[in-house]
Length: 289
Image (cartoon, rainbow, N blue to C red; front, side, top):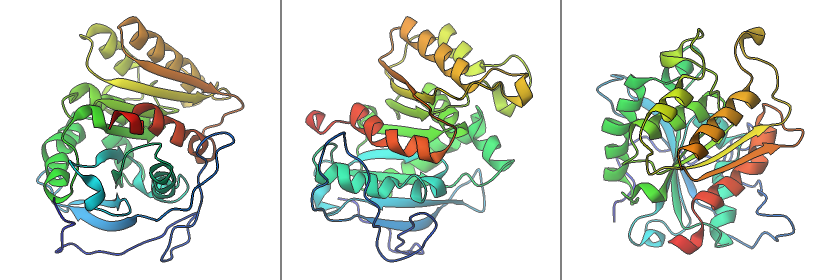
């Protein structure tokens, strides 16, 4: 089994709601009425991924489950999450995985929490960017597979994000379905044009799915029922409308789509965090391992 790379700068972090400590203590919901079992916690390591595309490298965190690497017999499932700082803090992905794995709701999983930074760099990464997608496929994924005990199977690999991160997740999976067989998007910014464009034609990615052959990719999409205001001050489609249209196109093309409009849901980590465990379990239930 691959071991965590010894040469990287390692800082064991427990970042929950912006507080840095030695442990991660936030308990995440599993399911309505479910009890949280006594559980061990995984480790989270901060690191820099070397890159030819981005010569200074790219910042990220990697979560490994309790018992790693022994727990990963045959390779752990893999989650790649964009906007990694948010998934480390407000979205509490490490704690969610601790709980789901302990409850045997999902298999032992390694998660790469990728730091996309702030605008404009974040949008350059996540808004239908061919350059960034190529980095993910050609540099980041080979690096992760070399240094961590993770699956190479796309049907056991989830790519996820919220807002622009959800758009980026769906775009990368469309470009590289041999790497990513599952998309978990929350309030995905599917109104956008190609290559970070704020101009028409809007909903560019939806048009690409409509015009392309069906790919072996499953989707878990949710969006807040209150996300009804058009983007760019009303000039572009709303997140709710854009997500509805993408879900409709995907279903029409024969994709497996789990689509949900969150009652009173807003564009915030508070809405996304509640549904994140359900998305992970829907795409990677323990029974399939």
